[in-house]
Amino acid sequence: MIVINPNPPIRPACCPFDNMAELYARFDSLLVGVEWRISSSCGHEVLLFDHHFFHLASVTRPPELVLSMPGERAEILSTVVGMGRYQLGHGGSRARNLPSAMETIKYPDEVWVNNPIVDTAKWVYVKQFDSKPYPYTIALIGERPVEGGIIVPFSSFPCKSKDLRKWRQGVCIHPKQIQPPEGG
Image 1 (cartoon, helix red, strand yellow):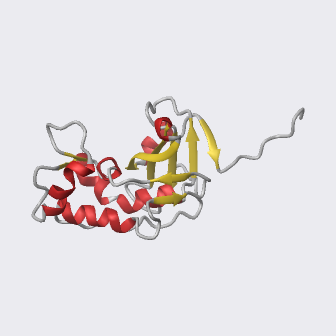
Image 2 (tube, rainbow, N blue to C red):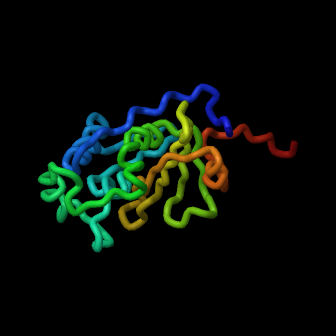
Image 3 (cartoon, rainbow, N blue to C red):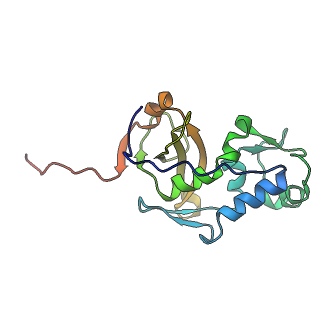
């Protein structure tokens, strides 16, 4: 196992939910007190909007390719039995691990830029937890140039040790590495 934090915290408890309305309520409750703005320990101000629910919890409604919260909110809040017309990607793992996603965005152990396998996001946030079989959480974070360069989450997911190396590529910008003095 790759150790990036010698004293990793215990992974936050999974997000319990029985239906889509409850899942959205859990997502919303994770953001209480941060007012949809997270001052990350790496120095980024990450903005979250209600539609990030779809990305972070991996919620889809086939055959729709793009979901918008104004168009879906009423149905989500009224789906109090099961998932209704919605589906959870990745076996619901991303939805259950929303608390870990938020911790990773708030307190990343590492932040990598210029990862060659990431097309859309600019930064890869990595957080190590004291948990198995997924000791890491990855959060993909990007900029929205058409909206003044605001920083937003694109996705987040638990990661096994064997898969970590591919996310730790590019340049590590957090924590800041001590650079050798010029000329020596």
